[in-house]
Image (cartoon, rainbow, N blue to C red; front, side, top):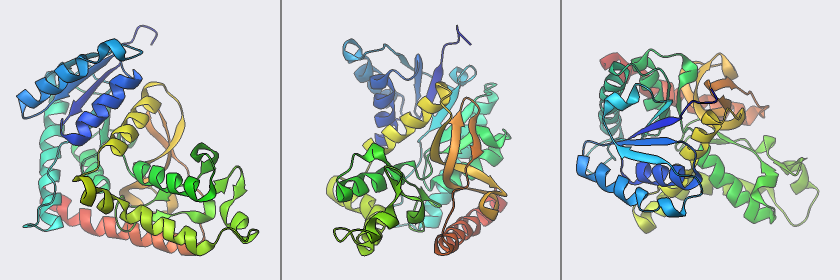
Length: 317
């Protein structure tokens, strides 16, 4: 492994993909980064722009635009390609389009002889990741999605502002769907090792209603950002880079990625955002955190929503 050169292939150079690529080269996470896009000129332009910053990156990254043959020796293929839901179509039709797009990409990648890890960001990420795993035929550890990584980062950021504590001293997760049914696992949040609910109950400064409001705002914040600037991409780009780093550096980091539930939390055959050990194997093992009865019910509702959506879609493919 000492002489191994890490290669990451990015499929999709839209706002999310290009933000991911910038985070990757700025942090020097991989030795090689290959950009693939149906719009070849867009991919070429992104490569040129990224390379023009090489002088300022701490660690140089070899960046080029390529094709699916470059996936043969890739460690990770990150898929951000997809369409956004328009005002003229239903959410379901957008889901069907993105599953079809990802199915085509998976087919082309696997034809190259790829034997690495798929990292999916195309929305709805839990459903698309589950479909990608089915299409790829790879072990469950090697097809993962961004899950609730971004939701968790948003949640911890807002909690850090509320408690006036550095966000790296706060631990907690958003779990379930990356979407409206997501669950803030408040009973598991800790501030410097102290349970957040206990902290609130022992203080006159903080209130449980405020924490519930923060969970609601976490769920809805993307809509606010989209209203102000059109779309969100820096946060998810950085989150994808974080997951990639955990894989390539074999960190055994616990991140709330979209992983296959195979009896975990009492559910089977569905991907959802849950704390998972991430290393060179991909999503090695799911961590089951303790939940309150109310949180268990909310998670069940979230998982059942995902299963109810993905099952009929996969029957069509």
